[in-house]
Image 1: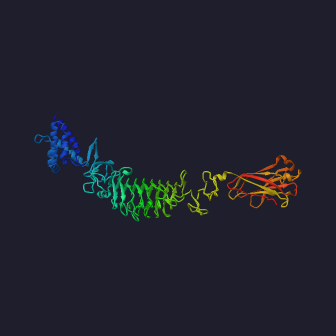
Image 2: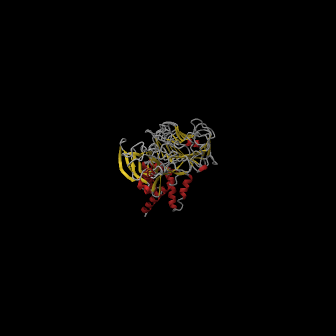
Image 3: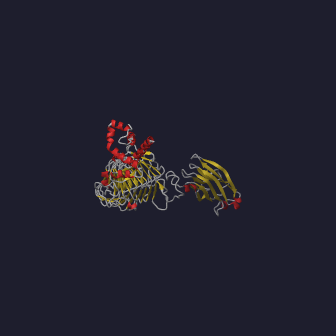
Length: 626
């Protein structure tokens, strides 16, 4: 019975020791540092237990707090307690259990852990940098602030709060760790941070600053996040020449901040946000750009691998030059994506380009941006001739077609421009456009005409061009499919030729170079009043027609010999003839020849009508009357 009681007591006290660790004031603080209110709370939790158990628990707390050092320092003392001999009537086994529990805990490195649902959970001290955490979700607390849960895969450092509108806010010692006692300015909060440990500054909704001295992010791995939506987001108003905010340390992020129009001109090189360090991210911010705002964002030579994404900029007055200005060649590998840039009107819009670079920056990627209200003749995206990278899937509107995007030497995919409402946009640059006779890829041809776009006032369009103007000879799909005609009058001229001989031309047909003829038919009228064949020739005489082709460019070869022969006396009912020629190659010529059985000594006029298909009108040359 006594042995069973001893075993039960060992188990009970071991459980009490584990329970005691849950009441530590700071995570990881051992039981011997319990004090004051926490100690009383621990003891109150035991009131419902058996009185003797409570007595042992009180004795346990007192004993551990006072003689732990002696126990660890004195092997003899430890052996005495391990002898299982009663001392003053008290069985030491409970303390042995606690002693064993504490030493196993230290040996396993569990001093800063607590038992939760059967698992040991690590809890670092408030503000400590997390190393080798077992879980991404961590409990944390800045001294004097509220405890909070953070995702250590995204943010591992301290958290500070900024709110100029809070009742109790001050840029002073003791402020910033609690949202009820925030600091009043972002710059002061930056001073509280430690570089390279992932500190976070939370700027609360409604915060407002008139910036009279540059806000400098000079500590690495710092994140500034504004809370709120719309105009309730934290707002900054630039009232200082130069930069309103500058990112001067690597790996910093600025998110969801609202910049009002500047009240003070920033001057040459000044901006609302100057990025002067690598791997900066600017996300979800808003700019209202007024007359004093030249550039909202500038990227210096040190701004490598910068990402600008999901931002909005609106021009509210004439004056801004650009939303982002790449100022140096060193600003390589910039990513500018999914931003909405509104020029406000074609009067107020950016004077150079919403996304602008006069530098030979390299390896950029610009995509998914929408730029509207571009000024005529200016660009939404304007890069220098030496800039390289990829520009794709951007929408540009309001300017001059062919001038809203100047990609420099960047490769382009699927960028669309539009200068009018109620129309579909046009792909720019065009599909592999070329100058007339030159392989150089340009937007304009030698006559400053847009390449790949229908510009002729006399050429019809049927759903656009198949190719460029130069490639298709300024012809559309409609031009190539439409039925053409030629109507005129040919003459049998007795004074010019002997029509009883073989192969005297009546009508010659010549295609335009590069434009073959198909489905050619020629209808001849043989019964013109007074001067026609029936009217002039006597009933016993005949007329025959044949077709000849000049295939080699020199010699006429008869193609259809004596296709039709008619007597004048038989034409009272026939009145005309149809000659089907068919296809004529682009480099051929074809002619209709006439032969009569005997000449009458008088010219005969034969009206004709020709119908055919070709991409360009062919030339019809009839024999003219003498």
